[in-house]
Amino acid sequence: MKVVVPVKRVVDYHIRVHVKSDGSGVETAGLKMSMNPFDEIAVEAAVSLKEAGIVSEVVVVSAGVAACQDTLRTALAMGGDRAILIEISADAEKNLQPLAVAKLLRAVCDREAPQLVLCGKQAIDDDAHQTGQMLAARLDWPQATAVSAIEAAPGLLTLTREIDGGLERLRVDLPAVVTVDLRLNEPRYVTLPNLMKARKKPIETLTPESLGVDIAPRLHILKVSEPAPRARGEILASVGELVARLKEKGVFA
Amino acid sequence: MNLLVLAEHHADALTPATLSALAAARRLGGDIHLLIVGTDCRRIAESATRLAGVSRVLVGDATHLATPTAEDLTAVILSVLARNAYSHVLAPATSTGKSALPRVAAKLDVAPVSDVVEIVDAETFVHPIYAGNALATVRSTDPIKVITVRPTAFAGTLSETSAAPASLETISVPPADTRSRVTGRDLTASARPELASAKTVVAGGRGLGSKENFERLLVPLADKLGAAIGASRAAVDGGFVPNDLQIGQTGQIVAPQLYIAAGISGAIQHVAGMKDSRVIVAINKDPEAPIFQVADFGLVGDVSQLLPELTEKAG
Ligand SMILES: Cc1cc2nc3c(=O)[nH]c(=O)nc-3n(C[C@H](O)[C@H](O)[C@H](O)COP(=O)(O)OP(=O)(O)OC[C@H]3O[C@@H](n4cnc5c(N)ncnc54)[C@H](O)[C@@H]3O)c2cc1C
Ligand SMILES: Cc1cc2nc3c(=O)[nH]c(=O)nc-3n(C[C@H](O)[C@H](O)[C@H](O)COP(=O)(O)OP(=O)(O)OC[C@H]3O[C@@H](n4cnc5c(N)ncnc54)[C@H](O)[C@@H]3O)c2cc1C
Image (cartoon, rainbow over all chains, first blue to last red; front, side):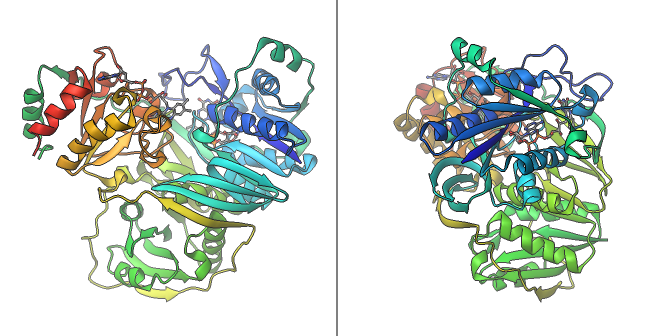
């Protein structure tokens, strides 16, 4: 079966972002960009299913500016077979919302006819936690979110989801959309030889227009602000002092 | 204006997170319809008719809804929306809400807003992005606003009741979508307070060293304080505690009165889940650990010495 893996280019997770002084957004210029960590896990899952002989082809897809090619190359170096870039201008990307991404990915799925889409459960920039579920809805496919274990059988998946309070086991018929959580696997490192090989793998470029999708934003960003900082705390010398201070605050029995 | 709130319940009671979603709905104003979905949930439904601001309780009762999938919840919500005009659909930003509401929104062709922490007006909402390092204020012009609400941002209690009880209506539900089904759940049984709504949280990280140390050093303190136990991702990945105790960007969001972080470095992904706690205490042997930047009180030292001492002096 064929698997589609959507990958998003985001500010690297080590970096602490700052809000632009005019409140129009987050300053991303000049920052290190990487593949959304959850998407690395999704690529790893797809590639290991291929290595296990269950998956025949892994197609990675990204919607964004031309530089998303770097993200796609990384995914190809991890073992993706080919890539699709849905190229969007920098201005449009700033306001590309999950509903639009879901519609773009739906259009890609209509062309590619995969049996499975593996997404990250959330992107670490907007933390929307929406795209996979929205894609499943637009395709009218079943979904499973925050998945930490996958077992594949013909025509169906047996999955474990991380839910509040524990774990849930789910059986889902294919085709389906699955969004992955951190504990599903540990993504492999990209090696230089694999990166070189990935250069030869094809990246096809599409546009929202060529896919016939309207990506106009539905949510208007009025402003982006920094949260109120916490007052600077103190280092105390002893446990006794700590207990006294906590009692003062009324939070210690 | 009608608002639909998706309720969650457990052991014959509405969850605290549901009460928070109701509190958010009351901020919006309008007639609140509370949708309760499950199997044999009549009792909960009856008690819910007394909740402040709720004008109607809708009950979708069916065997396949005992542990509903996102697909089944979506179908029920869509059937309610088809029969009545609603301006908003709300659910708590729990694993259920976060899984089902985007699906509902995409079916309606509207843009959902996740994890709302502030309601500015009926169409303007604030939600955190970048692990809480920025707050975005967004306006939705869609005909129906579909939002999940961060429970810690809205205080809701059962004690707020209305004089006139809400009407109770059993709705017919669409058949099960058999393409996906829940085959089991392993819920962590615990006599402790629920992590998301606990007044005190004692959390441990990699610095605890092992599962044995976690149990020996941290658990007694939690016992004595009547606290919920939390953990960093490193502690979960190290097998010290189950996954549902992870606090952070990808785990639970908590905002207790007191948060004690022991052997946790304070990575932004962890801080995202606890920085709205009222009082934060950090215990770490590294004086440079970033956790001290968000802590009100810090102790620099070894957990194996400081935690037993704190436990001893507590209570
Ligand atoms: C207030 C606000 C501020 C914003 N600021 C910025 C900003 O500063 N910089 C910026 O770049 N954008 C910004 N955006 C736009 C943002 O890119 C979109 O809102 C985004 O699509 C939100 O979804 P998410 O990626 O968090 O989705 P999620 O639902 O969390 O993503 C889940 C998964 O969907 C898939 N996916 C999501 N997007 C893509 C994609 N483009 N291509 C391929 N797969 C994808 C991935 O598998 C991902 O793991 C902002 C948006 C808002 C609302
Ligand atoms: C996409 C993504 C999402 C993530 N989501 C989350 C999340 O939701 N929650 C989360 O927690 N993490 C998350 N992480 C991981 C996060 O980046 C950190 O790796 C993690 O929080 C580190 O856990 P820790 O503080 O326990 O471990 P460490 O960073 O290793 O810190 C251990 C600390 O213990 C101290 N210490 C060691 N021994 C002792 C001792 N004997 N006494 C006292 N102190 C001691 C050390 O000084 C150190 O500061 C995520 C990462 C990624 C990439």
